[in-house]
Length: 246
Length: 313
Image 1 (cartoon, helix red, strand yellow):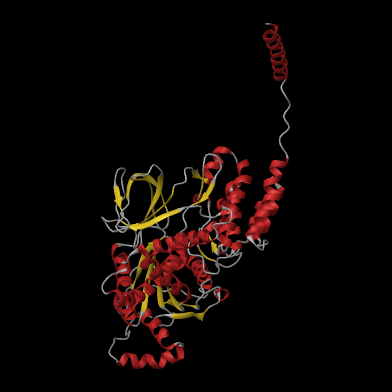
Image 2 (cartoon, rainbow over the protein chains, first blue to last red; image 1 turned 30 degrees about the vertical axis):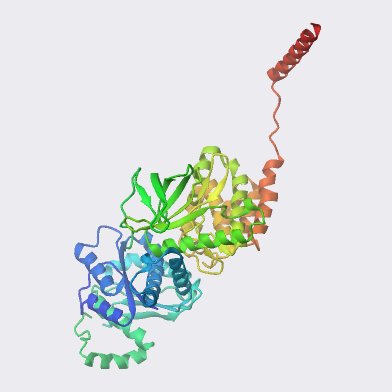
């Protein structure tokens, strides 16, 4: 199971549409969840619509919360998405056996069996979760809370029976990369320490290009491999980021 | 976010089960949990009242039902044992879907009472020794069957007028060794950097200890929880426990917070012998008031006089 969790506080303003990037992610079998973090005021109609649209295109969930609810929301979303992914897969099997019909249409005894399987797989299936953190200037006061929430989430994932790996990206990078890898795939909570200490904040929010970068990381594992494929990818005419602000 | 699109039920509404056909009449709202809304209902044809939980999500609710039915079947298999000690003495009744609206629900025994924190604030914290024992009894029963409760907090404990305690809301319950599904910040071992979120017996015992602290020193707990996440530790909670006037309770809590009990059965026995018995052991000495002595003497005289009067004729 593969998931991206995007944490942002506003609208993207550079590069490709993040909604399209999320649709690409879903195509690759990666679910995209989005959390909008607001502490004072609101996120704006445009921002909240974008957050919802990214999640819809990415087959995931979206929520707008304040920093106090951040940890709990991240934990809940990740779990719900794992269960949903499993449920979708199981539902396909159920449909093969029973013809048309969803979980709600099954008689209680059958439903109980299906849910037992879903619970079992949700706990044991391997999970890869990439966290993509908006580090634009307005997010700066919230980054400490984000880091605490990531640590808390990692603690929950560590308790799963299946292997759960987390990687962390922030965007934009200081030298023009759409996203920077802060922590590569890890199963260890203690690796998450002082993630964003060195970040210099930038004004731009290239959410779309950043999602594309994370997709590359999912596909090819390491960043070095990715550089090679990066060029090839832009030849595909998928529209690699050209002129995002540096 | 998948939250219920079900409208709230009003008193008098009838919920009919699609599969089993039983009819339930809504009396009033009892409360809301993470997985659904609970109503007090009457079942047509029976005098008893039940609690009926309408789920927000079929899968989440079924998962909860599965835990309860497997507990119930554990109980049935071990029925020759002490009935009263079973963690769910006939707690779960049936699960069904509404014939109108199609929403999933299940029906359970209705425990008439109030949440633990209300009970203690109304009746006094001297009840904690007894209720704590009953709770630990429930928990160790669950553990014996291979489950943990998970989301233990005062809101999930109902206490009857006469101190009967019952766990409600099994949304966080699951098999031992699995990750804990639902928890509440203050009661969570991970929140205090005191261990993993893998459900084991000491996870519930930790949550139980925080529950005691919350009931006895909520402001102290609140303050400790407000620290930076990295600096929170079980040690802060142990310090709070040590400030309690009851030293035996404090040392029990210290053990639970540090994961010092190997099983919850052991923790229960320690509670019984140290916390519970220590309350019973020292009844408050009460001087007999003088008027009572006088009244007693007078009534003796009256008795003697009456006896004399009766036998005289």
